[in-house]
Image (cartoon, rainbow, N blue to C red; front, side):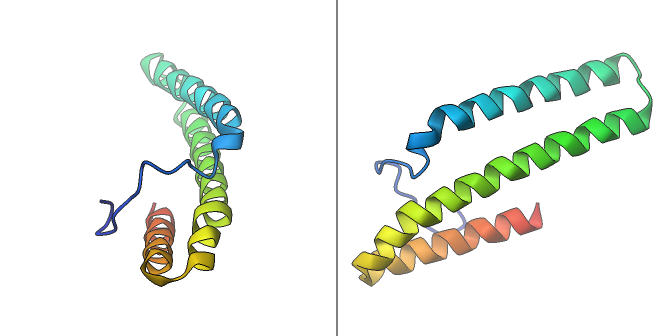
Length: 104
């Protein structure tokens, strides 16, 4: 359950066709974060560290928006076509996800 909305983890995710792309992007971001940690350890100039933090933040936002787009195109559209409680659940779920992204 996420934000009061049941999540169905047994269903194939909408991003499954691009799983490797997302995994590759996340590994790249992980490397960037390790680089930022190294910069802090080496006491690099704060603006340089902040620049890298901003780059990682934007990269994570791009991943999040891509996943959200895939979810809407796959899970939400399928549920909307089926109608009923599942459609309402998926719409509530995506609304909550958008809310979390906006607040972050």
